[in-house]
Length: 111
Image (cartoon, rainbow, N blue to C red; front, top):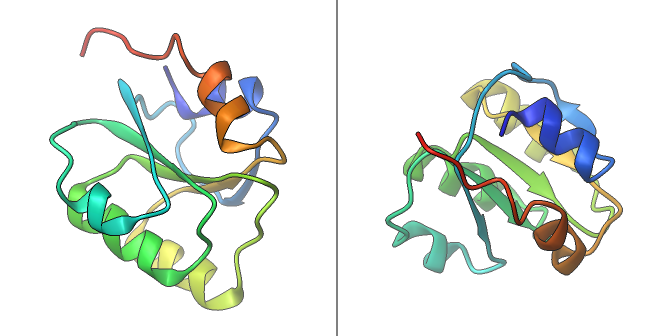
């Protein structure tokens, strides 16, 4: 699935624009960045309701394709600036993490 397709499915808006054609093949959902750091997934979208700079730092370490903030969370300027600096697309959706997971359940594809 591409980031643009994802954004359409969950009615997300771009906070830090990215290449909408970037593909991801899995979704990792967590508010605990320590759990994300030990994930063995590749080419994934990170979904979280945590809106701190730690999210982007973690996404950068694990090579997440992008970050999607759930529950209508908005990025503070420091988070936005860090995402821009690191080149990590950042989106937000009004949907809950549960509803985002349900919407993206079919995203798993063949890399």
